[in-house]
Image 1: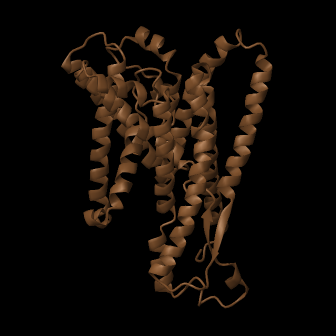
Image 2 (image 1 turned 180 degrees about the vertical axis):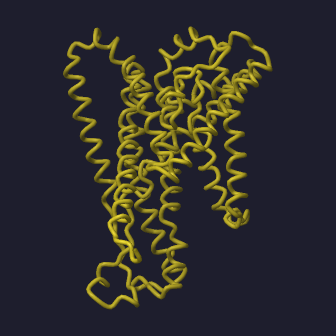
Image 3 (image 1 turned 90 degrees about the vertical axis):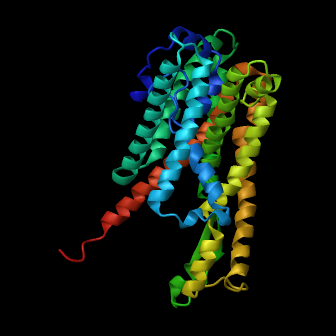
Length: 385
């Protein structure tokens, strides 16, 4: 939170203040990755470049011919950091293109880009340290960035609207009830699971009937929403940078105006991204090929299916079906309301709330699970004192 408010030099903050009043959606979208787009600050990029790089890397690892899964940890980290670096350059240039600088020289631009990239890599290091020595990992960094963006934006939304809305208390009460409903249904989707019974040949007691493979009703959780917003910002920044380089291009201008969440095209692209990421993260979280291989090696099996490919296909079918359910749920909660926001821009920021509540529920449940795992670990007595 402190680094989000460390301003950078050579930036016209009066211009930023004026433009931030009209950029509710951009600020909230950036908040999903811990970014601060309401001003040019040290941590303005947040973890967005790293999150985008992780998605691209996961997609590349699915291409077996690249053999990326055979790289050691040091090599894979190098390529991930390289991709993060490239994306951070694009996003920082795109962000700086939106605002006026007090001095527009190549040297000043390079200095600002280096500072913003440094802020992103510091956050990545902080997330790694939190994963190793703390609780929540990168989730907590994204969470606090998201809360900060929501607070700043909703203050701007509700302050002027209190004079225009005839029944402000009714509006606030309705939003509160809808928020409670979204939280409850998000928890249900996070906790509900489909269970595939596993027959374990080495377990021959009452516990043998209790072994199963759990698949969540929404296998990807809120990751599709969180990473989807981060992914969507990359082409937006690319279009803005190219528009600055080729200002006479009508195609680039149209793309820069229609890729964001303030247009029907942008919302449709976001929903399509949610659908795609739901299946990607579903397959990552429930790796049917690895599970089938482990079952075959241990001698365990699913009744009616031979070990190997038949077992893998059976598990993958269920993962795909439940990923589709999760994709529809994410699209209805986080994506569909944004169409109304395009038609009624004054409510666009409020309509981002359902997606943010989904992410908040997913993040908090993840932290709770980590705390419980630590409690279980420390509940056992030492074997040798």
